[in-house]
Amino acid sequence: AQSVTQLDSQVPVFEEAPVELRCNYSSSVSVYLFWYVQYPNQGLQLLLKYLSGSTLVKGINGFEAEFNKSQTSFHLRKPSVHISDTAEYFCAVTAFSGGYNKLIFGAGTRLAVHP
Amino acid sequence: NAGVTQTPKFRVLKTGQSMTLLCAQDMNHEYMYWYRQDPGMGLRLIHYSVGEGTTAKGEVPDGYNVSRLKKQNFLLGLESAAPSQTSVYFCAIQMGLALETQYFGPGTRLLVL
View 1 (tube, rainbow over the protein chains, first blue to last red):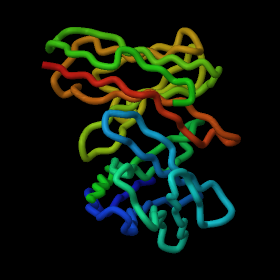
View 2 (view 1 turned 120 degrees about the horizontal axis):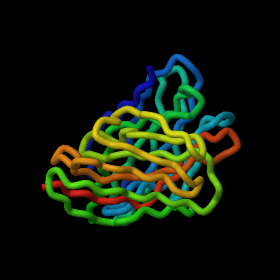
View 3 (view 1 turned 180 degrees about the vertical axis):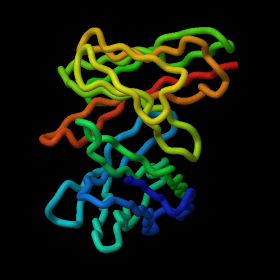
């Protein structure tokens, strides 16, 4: 069965510093991978996704993620964060199950950007 | 929110009361989902639907019922609310060439006292 592990529940960082949010998944089959962002009191917004092709995926707001099949990882990075990046970030993987693409989420990483 | 709306935005219930959450979409999507979000647990699938008139159980279906009488609407019902159902509920639709990507509504915050 597929599962997703977000290795850090909280990541504090100073403004303009780089950040990496780590995500590992387990799956015996090919998967699609996603990162979503949730700003306070809002819904989930798609940041980026990996379906196939280039392993480096660029998303909105300057974020990018790299798919590493051998390490079953999909870490999210940003070279210079802003206060406005403070949010919760969720990694997710699809699993085809019974006729639909089931989405399995990690527990989330809370990114806190400090001035 | 990819044309997904949820009503109500907030609700407070007493234990044992019932209510229905509405998810509406205006893009004719077949696949719709209900999730609940709890701290430290990410999102967990409650029920889903692959088309009008069809529903199926997800990961945590107990205490909930759903209906999809119209393609545009996916209803989530709590027949007898319990404090354990205090949560934020999200509806999602599925899009993409391989129907691989889910887009979420703004959520409903439910407090059961």
